[in-house]
Length: 153
Image (cartoon, rainbow, N blue to C red; front, side, top):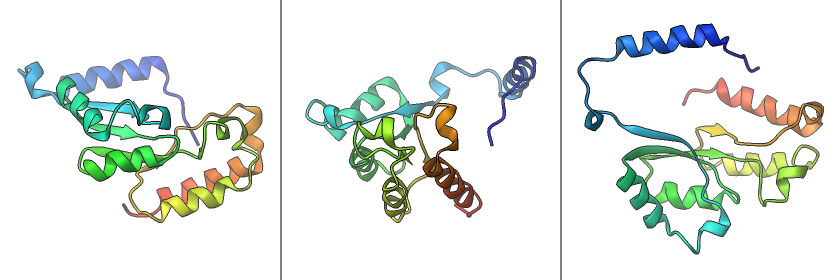
């Protein structure tokens, strides 16, 4: 279940967060974390995993959450830098799955098989309309996520 943060509460939380930071801090003391990177199949011939990691180095990004279509892009980056790549599993085998995954009964077995690797820290990013939220595959996917959330990491 997702909760929305009331903007005024968000402002208070941000203010408290900044108030708790040790001072003074310089830009060099702060690490960058990119919370949303895809390394999808069209990117592979253009950027090698080493080139991607080099770009992260050049821009000062120390960690990145990565989800890719197909998942092999995430695996390629994770295998080269497991301490800095946070793998997240998408329910897409191909780009075509983006529009059909909520009713495709082969998606859940695919996701369950990929999860056997034991490396994933989350499920996502996926696209979902309000109407699709009632689809059986979505409900099973949410139940799987809830079960995984209850397991120790």
